Length: 192
Ligand code: GLN
Image (cartoon, rainbow, N blue to C red; front, side, top):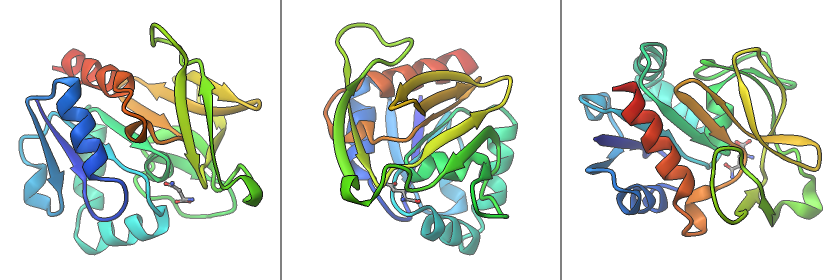
């Protein structure tokens, strides 16, 4: 299994490390179109979605990644990555990849709580609660009919899955808990 992490901006090395610990054969940074060759899955990390989106456009990565997602290659968007996947973004009349049927709201958790951590229950993960780190996090206002809601915090959807597409509003790569990366690798295995 060869998994890429989009490496234009944001939390990259932590995702690569989590993937390795979760048992990916190869975890590689993706900076150019050629890096997409032979990937079995791709992580879209947190950062700033506007910046990452612009860079994806500039490096001609937007169309190829969209096509991969449409062809069934599993993708996992965390925080800004969730926004990149969304096919609707609140207050914005453009989207980035637009492949996942979710309505995303940016910077949802208020200024005074720009960053917070909380223990959450994620459907499909066994064992203890998951420590979720929210950094200027988005949330999902609405999901389409094929989307399964995996976690809710303060009545806001913060994790969801649509077949081979997984999205979290928080940063699972920052806590050392690799269960979501394992969950994603299972999606990749199932897609093969
Ligand atoms: N607020 C950022 C955005 O709208 C996301 C923050 C993050 O990825 N930690 O893109």
